[in-house]
Image (cartoon, rainbow, N blue to C red):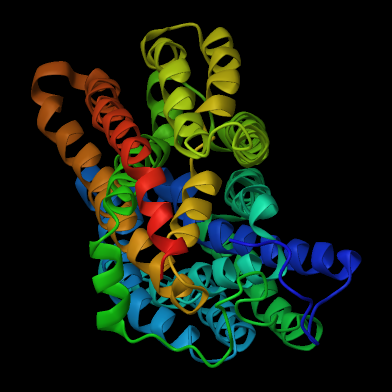
Length: 430
């Protein structure tokens, strides 16, 4: 990685790069508003359609994740060869339109199909965006830039919880889907005419727009990077807890703490949205700063974040004091959210510029199959199985069980750090 690579004719001003990053962050926020709106709406949907927790987990997790990861790799492969901005614009229009259509669903099957459509659209969002950001910003700024982009997750969750809860409480869950879906279609058009495609491989001496590695070549290179697979599994196990428990957190507060849907939406907008956005940014910023001393800080930061948050997280699930539990959880989520930006930055550092969208797609394939696919479904299924024994406490104990996946996550980050310097050295000899 050489930040001193000569400027290309398509290099952009610092102000435009900040604008482009802001636009892509809005895209990611819309992504998660449309993805997570179901989470705040699932209790009224469950009541109207008579669903089980396992069915809710299937809706918010596995059904979405299956199409998301299946479509993600071919779309990313295409994005490594095409105009990435255009791929993102089409993706935003598709997932936003399908979110709006979710409000018209009359039964579980129709809602399931609509969520599959959302997953298909969102498959074209992040990998091309990751690749563009790595071409807008030099290596020593990438984790920070990617973390700012990744904070769109939590901005999206904030607005999804806040507006979803209020709209559902006032007008019903169907209206909430439509209100959050339509603006994304409009934003896709704005993006098409304001966002410019960066020069591919701008900051690497070997990167050019003509370099188009094949799928086999990319997978073969990744196979020779053990740190990539360890960090990918670390992300996947972390996401298992984030999605598994996060998707049921509104239900937990409604069932176990007696909160209303509008109240839950407002509280989680603050607690989960604001704190996680702060933590996601700090994870990238601290990694970029500390990596000057040792590159392995890109993986030690996610590891430390999970370790420090473990006890406060347990407290939130076990306490009966709603206010104190949420206050402690706010600070736990700051450090708990350190992981994504640094891991994406290191995944991109391990491959050539023409492989980055596909590399992100592979990372997100594993992350979402294990995290988004299995996390909510198994958390819901275990909750259903525990009802005969634990009654209204079943969801609490299921979430406690889900949380134990943090232990293999920490081990994976440790193993990734062990191999990282040797794998990065392989790039300098290619």
